[in-house]
Amino acid sequence: MTAGDTTTASPTAPGLPWRAKLVVVVLVLVAIVVVLVSNRLLTDRYTADTRNAAELRLALYSGNLMAELQRTSVVPLLLANDPDLVAALKERSYSGTSAKLIALQSQIGVASIRLVDDAGRVVGATDRNVLGTNYRSEPYFVEAQRAKDTIFSVVKRDSAGFDFIYSRAVMGDAKPIGVIVVSVDLMKYERAWAGLQDAIMVTDSAGIVVLSTEPRWRGLPMAEALALRDPPSAIARALRATAEWAQEPPDAYVLGEAVMKTEARVPFRGWKMATFTAYGSVREQVNGILALEIMGFAILMAFTFYLLSRRAWSRSLSFQRESAELRLLNSRLQRAIAEREKVKKDLEVAELTLAQSSKLAALGEMSAAVSHELNQPLAAMKTYLAGARLLMQRKRLDEALSSFQRVDDLIERMGAITRQLKSYARKGGEAFEEVDLRACVSSALAMMEPQLKARVVKISRGMPRQAVMVMADRLRLEQVIINLLRNALDATKDTKDPQIDILLSSGETATLTVRDNGHGITDLENLFEPFYTTKQPGEGVGLGLAISSGIVTDLGGRLTARNGDGGGAVFEMQLPILGKEQEAAE
Image (cartoon, rainbow, N blue to C red; front, side, top):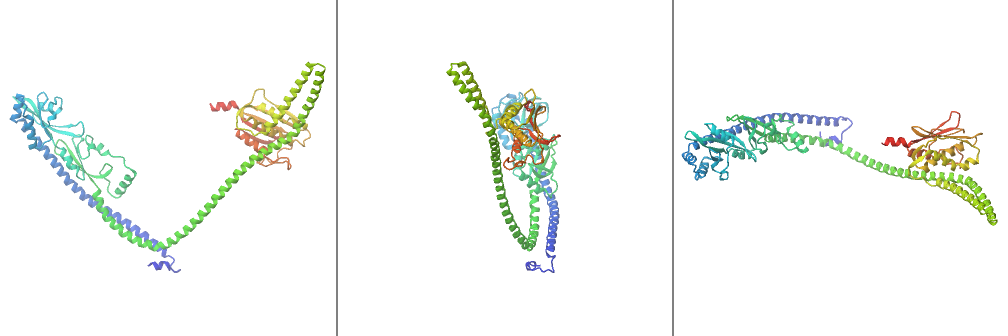
């Protein structure tokens, strides 16, 4: 099959693309199986080769270490019988002792040699800085004086590492007159091992690491030493998982890297030596062969993908066109959302404006009745002032002052009427304060007095004797009560004997009930919706109850409505009692 065959496929061969896909799937499966089998076989082979080489190197390392220990073990015996050193200890003449020891060190090749007298004081040493140091309490000094043979000790240094010491008593006249101390230079093997690829450690009979290519391991048990490593990063964990996915489980981890462990016994005081060889060489050899296999399959699959790429390219062009159309639709949708949000904000401003307009319309309705109320004090003032003028002409000043006092009372009454009118016209603020709901009802009734006097309406009030305190904006709360009273007046306009009942109760909440005997509510579901009204055009805009419900909600209460059992409408306003709010807050 060629590329030209795929582009000119006729209706007689509709299954050609599916056969090509099947070929791709088969190629992938074959590649996976070949790579997995090759990886397993090659890994086992190269791992065995690497382990055999590690065992040979371990035998060489342990042999060198044992040879050094055995060679150095005879040095204390020879020096303890040296005539010059014995004579120096007997005569306590040490002038040439250090020079002799330095010469012997260069010939023997040990780390250091020290001659200690019977009091534990260093009297000769290859390192002149330790002359005069007292070793009386050191274990290798004490044990050498008690024993007849050479004593081997492992002493931990103050800085890092260990000193490997042979000590033997120097005898004179059948008694110890001093101790010869020889330090074995095993650190040279650490320095030599550090340049190798393997990690090496030597442990004593207690399992403590005494020699190691990793300085941090010294002085620790083998398990704790191998557990020391820096926290791996996410990339390091991913690389380690990738390298180990198809190999045998590692023997151990050294600094976070999987290694092959080879261990052997050192025939000296129960010591053991272990080497840790990285799998890197194994993986490099295996990966080289696997890379060739994968490359071959990649070339084969690349040719197969090329045959299918033409159809994928046409689909890609179609997807790009669809993406462009979706982006265009998205931009249109964003513009529509922005326009809708703008319309919503304009509607909120319009609602606020209409609410204020409704309030001012009600104010205009009240002004006619208020002007009638102001005419009466004005007429009375005119009468009192005329009478006061006559009284003053007749020198009856006390009676004239009484007339002036009545005029002052009338002015105070007129001021109260105008203040109520102005407070109703002003927008309510957000200044919450402690308010007695009884005073709000009385103030609302006082402001509605002109409308109430214009009609014959029976007002029934039921108020508790104690104060009913709530936290609210006084002006807005009075506005709600006035709206409820105005609705009750409008509902009883066509009633023969109109009556409005006002009941204030205090329990879990403060509840104000306004009941009338009008025609009732026909549509309870839409009653509190903006612009819903049953009045004739020009009598109202349908915002009173919607505004009142919003105010009560802002105050933390709720406003409900229902039809009474005997007819008429019943409105209930519930607000939190001030004392209950304080207890809940505490």
